[in-house]
Image (cartoon, rainbow, N blue to C red; front, top):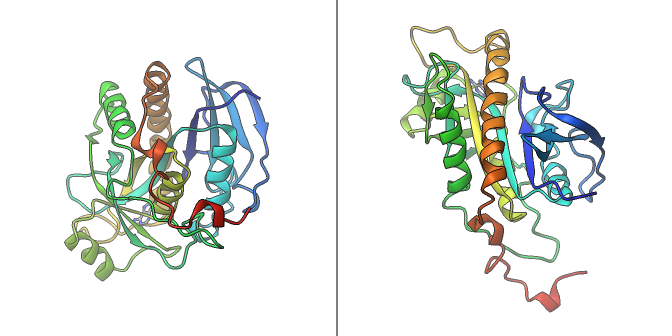
Length: 276
Ligand code: ADE
């Protein structure tokens, strides 16, 4: 199979990309078990892309149950060099309204014990993670989103994503704490993906789609699954437009990202001592 350089991970509400043509389903086995679902490989804007529904197409997987390593390993084995991740989030800032889009550029980790590395078992390595998303891919995503002039929707070109464990939503005290830390949005999935993508030398960017004001806002109801679902459908339509436009730009300009050489100087174990 020819290499598929562009990967897309769809979050809650985004279980397929309607615009894909010449679609084939590819199941990939990995040393880390099965990915969340089969990869849907198809053509978008004249380019082959691999789409994966993060929670499986029937939304059967909790954030804590996601096979993050298998998902990223699977993308890498298909040849993916650029990975666009779409994710439903709660807003922790007044100015990020439900349905707004945030191109995330920082993360805060509040997950518990998720395996977020391919290192270990004889190989000690530490990637640089000052900028956890690829600035060029994030810029392309933000430019693409802005160019669409989606009505009543603001595009926020940067923002900090607080990644919580879940599955319960936050308490009000937690929500206010995260606001005091300066976090912009809250979700349950993106940080392990960003770390593993960097270790896999894949350029990664997150399109966060706001569905609610979590539970801190005095004038808005606290987040419920019903509220999230109501906005997910609209978000999924917008996400597909933004991703399609990003893929169009990316297929015309396949830049070299720092992420593509993230392992240079990252591994402490001498190469001749690395287990085969
Ligand atoms: N995903 C969508 N809304 C969320 C919220 N308020 N907290 C965590 N994850 C979310």
